[in-house]
Length: 154
Length: 158
Image (cartoon, rainbow over all chains, first blue to last red; front, side, top):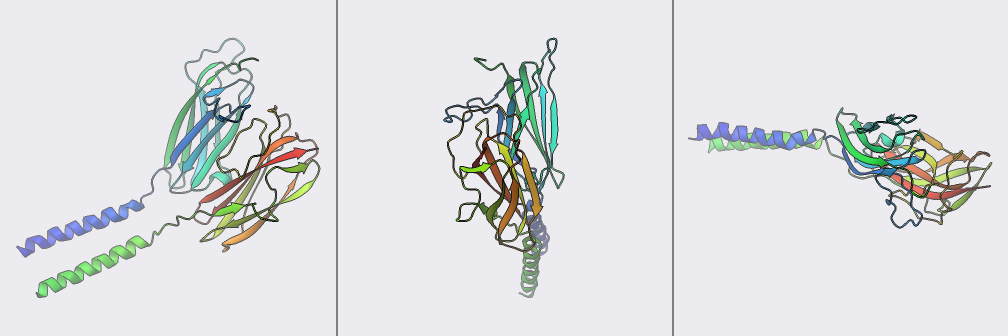
């Protein structure tokens, strides 16, 4: 009987060891609190009044909190239109930039970039991808969307 | 009885091995700190910086294990945005459109092996830049890669 128990016990122990140590495997980065839009607010009460909305010819804000388990190598912001047919003189705006600033190459980063929307960008719906790549080669993508509209009262 | 003894020895050996192989990856959970909130810290919230003048940014940084690098960045706040780590808020001028805003960035390594330090960074406000509200963002990173941030509301004046 004992001779049967030994190998079972042994293999159980080995399994436990494996489980307890594979926690060390590096998880992909986590992206949270994604904010996209023209952050304009005269009253400063609701800072995110214009969240999800941007205007041609003005700057918009892309922000997020990032927690990585190996240092962040790069953060890519990609903006592209969704089913937009631009009128004459307009463009379906596309934007992509890879940020490798020192302030982002950490474990806990706060993404904050102001991006200029071209004057001739076609109105409509746009998607934003935030892609974070860490030094271990893991990557995470977060998505957000915003509407490009003409500013009211202008 | 004898076989039990052997068995327990083996077990002990196993646990020792587990301990050794797992504690090597002990993780530094403590983030560094950064502040300008002390006498001598510069700039303080709502500080006025004059065009054509040069200043020295002074901030105290500390970490439990070791400091690694810093980054300083100044960008306009003509659109009244906020950061999650602001030291305080001052009265802002009306929203304006940026024409020639100051964009200042500087990053460097900190001396190795320090757990506390006062960092000094020279800042020149050029003559032609837009006056108005700015954010001065200060970043410090420790040897593990944790970052601490602080953001100070300042104004560029004539």
